[in-house]
Image (cartoon, rainbow, N blue to C red; front, top):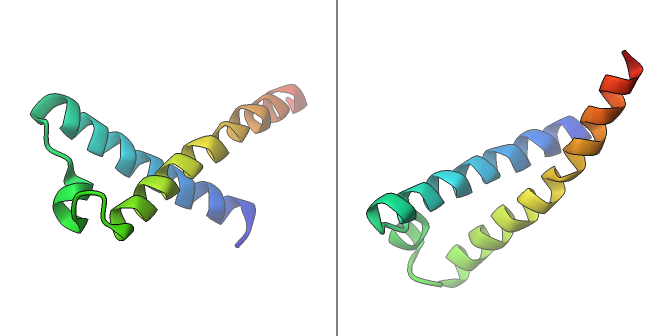
Length: 71
């Protein structure tokens, strides 16, 4: 997978995580737990992937700065 594909995948997972946190905050409804079970192995994998995606997306700040400096 190229970097652009990884960026889109991580961004999509982070958006899913953000929507889930919004649902938790507003309605006390955990969509991931509802769909895959409360802390089942599948829901834990999803939570882990969302967290790793957020950590990876921190690197986009560096890439944004490089693009801005190139202009």
